[in-house]
Length: 219
Ligand SMILES: Cc1cc2nc3c(=O)[nH]c(=O)nc-3n(C[C@H](O)[C@H](O)[C@H](O)COP(=O)(O)O)c2cc1C
Image (tube, rainbow, N blue to C red; front, top):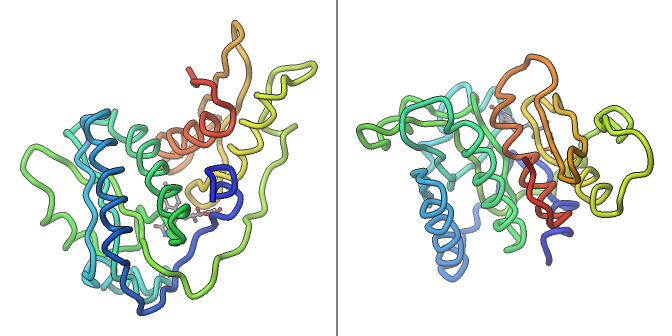
């Protein structure tokens, strides 16, 4: 599976099978997480065979079932880690999808109290991503169309259309899709549009989708 297929096939999955993630897949994800940390200065790590991270009333209320593995997104204290966690978290989410695994972002509906204990001093917890073999592959979200999120007028270059379509397939908190895309001085630009929850994290996620599909760096 290539990254474009992974972008198309990724949907939030909240119920998981009792199937362990194989050692070779763990190794590949670890290498990917190490590369993300080296590039970003974040402190991302993966917990395997640890049901406690999603063992809370809120997690069950949020319809998570049988989550035994999860990616922890953390980094140096400060607001700027939110967008970076979105960008690198989505990179790892798509790596997992390419390995045949399923995922779901969780900002609220997990056992935050327990996960916080795993974060070293000087670092802060951003959020987590549930990981494993889903009971099913999930379903595509309904959402905005290109006209609602593209601000540039006129013909879209092919690379821009590819990037914009992939951005619309990105997960966003409560599927809010609060972003706008355009071209400035020949380069793609993506901005948050309006107020919402976790919009900075969403922005990082959406930028990663755009870049992976278009091959262009977003400003
Ligand atoms: C930043 C962020 C935070 C999220 N937090 C939660 C959460 O706390 N609980 C939950 O069940 N889903 C959460 N989600 C998943 C979204 O509801 C989901 O991505 C969105 O509805 C779009 O669906 P899709 O991922 O299937 O495309 C979150 C997604 C993002 C991007």
